[in-house]
Length: 106
Length: 124
Image (cartoon, rainbow over all chains, first blue to last red; front, side, top):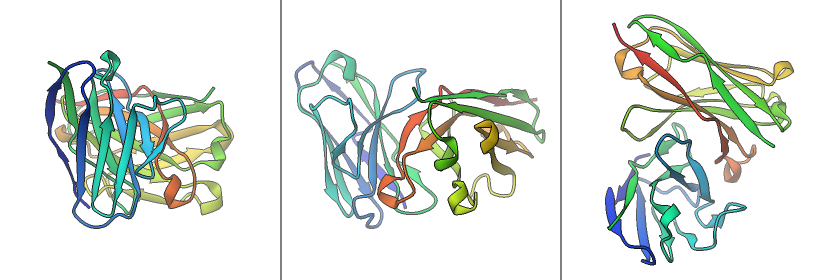
């Protein structure tokens, strides 16, 4: 199952609303997770089951979608949110990740 | 506190072998599936493979790119996960992360904890 993330990068300002999309090559129900990764660090789980916020993750992060089309939204971008974001499908083997979306400061 | 600490990375020649370890603490290791994920320099994340828990007979799954060359094992008595890498290729150069899978059911197959990673460099 291939995951296509878009855009591959974006520039945004603090306070902006940011939306990242992830499209699966076939239906994956809601078996999708979103991770945030900062340079030199391990990824951090943000969202699982497409829309469930991981404990401790700020509520400005939200996820939606089912089937083949999914979205990660950051409602008001904060300085600590500049990072690379990955979606991952958990519906079948091999598990696969999207190519990543790098969120940069405008 | 859940902790995952990888070790064993380093420089190895093409065709060589290396064994990575992941020491787990702060949770009941034997209850959880465990995975390896890698990241080549400047690239995205790539799933390597999985070993299920004892309740699921420690069965394994692998990415096509490593199947037949890599082997995942675990020692629940030592709270440790291993990745045996044989016939290494230059394209295996990456940071290798171990990651804990939250639960057995499909809806819980995401990675809730990750190690810090260990760098494997395959070069002559």
